[in-house]
Amino acid sequence: MVSQSSSSRRGLEERVAGTRRAYEDAFESDTRQGVRRLVAESWDRTVAAGLKPGEPPPDIDITDLGDRQESHPLAPYLPVLRSLLIDGHEDAWRILAVTDMDGRVLWLDGSRAGRQRADRIGMQPGAAWTESRVGTNAIGTALVTGGPVEILAAEHFITTHHDWYCAAVPVTDPDTGRPIGIIDISGPYRLASIDTLPLVRTAGRTIEEMVRAEWNRRDAEVLTRLLERGIRREDALLVSPGGRQVWGASDLREGPASTLDIEAADWGYHILHRRAHHRTTHVRLRVLGPGAPTIEIGERTIQLTPRRAEILVLLAMHPEGMSAEQLAQEVYGDDGNAVAIRAEVFRIRKDLGGHLASAPYRFTTKVDMDAGHICDLLTHGRVLEAIAEYTGPMLPQATSLAVELARGELHESLRRAVLAAGLGELSAWCGNPAGQQDTEALRALIGGLPAQSAQIPLLEARLRRLERELG
Figure (cartoon, rainbow, N blue to C red):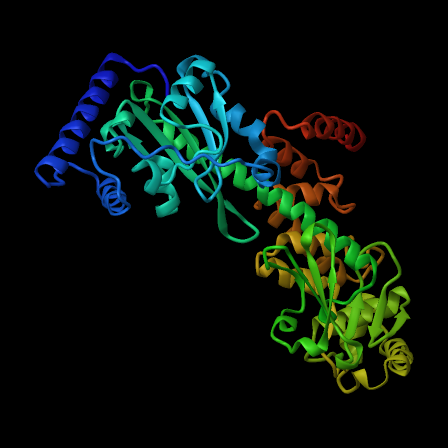
């Protein structure tokens, strides 16, 4: 709602006059000519609910909010909504209303004059602004349709609302995929603008992105604690409070309860654990990050020398198998010695038993390599999980060309996925040791945060320090 040019004001007044004629025709002549379909359907629902045109609504249904405000998921984002929708418009009688999915007004913000005007039509905290209580309005109609709604002047069902304009959008919780509240801007119709609904939609998307970033942060924190305990992916499933699968073996959801243990985690997350006697033997190759590479066979963990780790990575990358000569070429280059490779593989096979075959050398059991799992996660768009599991470049000391190329390709693929994702992924990456010096990601994170975010000064200081250190 902003100041209008003369031509815009004339156009607005013509639209308002059109809504008044359409309202009179609809309820005097029973015709819906000139009435938007969304409005006509809302009027029909309102009449079916017992309200009558031209009559005041029943007494406003006001409920004591109790702890509804404090516990509502949109509560932390009120300052952002005020900054986006109210600041700078206090003199325009613009009113910001935030409701829950029952249509109860949880918060009302705006100028004193605007709030007094809203109070006269019953728009106040605790009031129900559903269609069945106050007729067609942006909040109540958005609750029904699930999409953005704007209502102008006599498109409102109640005649005392005909001097008003309102624009509302639902806000969806990314954890459940279900709406959690409505954001609404209301005020005198004379201050309406074609920019109002797009502005409210942008504010809604901003809040959804911030909610998503918070869930991503929680996902990463809970998952990091889980991984620090050494829990294996195939034996556990981390589930969010809304039932979203965060990480782990999806088959655990379909399995009988008798095979599972359930553990509560922070913020309402829970972890499904496969009971020990229902587990199968898995081979896991751990080659990411600065620590010593290992291979896990069931409950047994074997620490690998750098050379043996390179050999096993190459075999994991070639499930069809490799000859001693091929391995020698990849590991040692043109000076490769097949005899030395055979000696190394002989010693490896003593540790791995029947999990490694010869002629050609190959794994006989499906190998879960952490580097390969990162690739799978990126393929399926699960960037946040990939960040949480990426502890650093693959075999950073390896010198074979094939491993060097694979190491660089994996790291760059993850970086590009992060830069193409949202704020949650950028924040997680910039907090991961592998991404803490990524100045491009830092710039993207700073540019994507709301201008009033307290993180920005800290991130900018970090960026300046990195730019000095890296030249």
